[in-house]
Image (cartoon, rainbow, N blue to C red; front, side, top):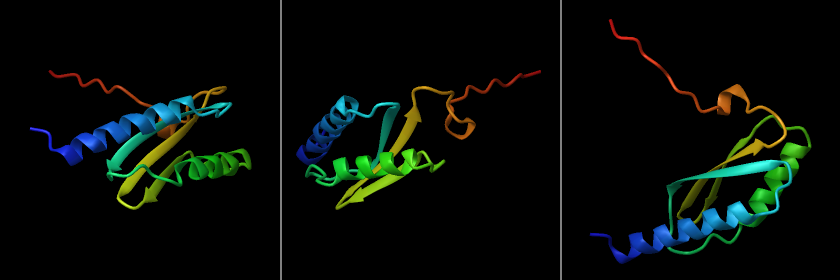
Length: 99
């Protein structure tokens, strides 16, 4: 059974994902992973994303950042849309051969 606080967290997470997906981030696709959630919408997320985009555009090779505010902990990864994904951020399938 889902408790009201957990349900609210899930709703907020969906809203945040929608919001991130609708952001104007030319040249980048952003993924978000929630490692901790709160019951209130994070206030500083937009400023955080804008700041990290500026850092990346200034030449930083780092693409993964952790947003923290109150009970929130959101891991954001910025993927450039005009180049191949860097090896350290690539999703890979591993195949094991059994004998």
